[in-house]
Amino acid sequence: IAPVPESQETESISFLELFRIAPVGVAGVVAAGFSFGSTLSMAPIYGDSLDWTVAQISFFMATVTGGALLFQYPLGRLSDAWDRRKMLGVVQVLGIFTLAWMLWNPQVAGDSWEVFALAVLLGGVVGSSYPLSSAVLFDWLRPSQMVAATGKLIFTYATGAIAGPTLIALVMEGVGAPGFPLFLIVVHSSLLLYILYRIQVRKALPVEAQEG
Image (cartoon, rainbow, N blue to C red; front, side, top):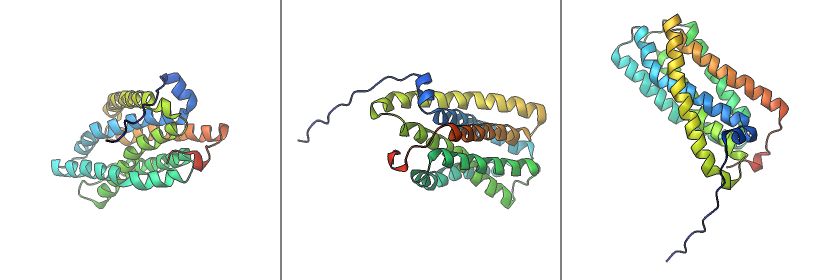
């Protein structure tokens, strides 16, 4: 009979303490909720406003999901060997580039190669932001704090995922289809600027001290 594993004591932790410990991680989780929730809820409306067919919208959404799955492992591995905040910043730059592409070409055809490329890139960005952000946070936590922190992160992410679709809907109602990439550009740009600020005021953890 295998021995009973030793139980580990857990510590409670508040939202404010989480933010104090790893502000980039918490800010990233909020932004990830905004971005992912907005994409899943409003991308079909965006496609419909561009006169895409139901099949084209379905393909776009499926490809976004595929991009989210495709990007997570390689980006995660890269972040293990680098300052995770910088890796998260690179992802935001990729997102801004992708969304600017959508904004620059607002009448992209639903059956073009651009749609496939945009969907893969967009999915990779919105699908990778949460795991990278949570990894940033967990790098700074003690093991006894991780259980409580996980619950707080899920709540924080869910809050962003609820607020994001509401706000992006208001923007799209005001400016039309371009409001979709425009709103997400603001979200990812805000996070990028905050990451750049935090990199200046706080040194990164040594790579060997990061959670692998």
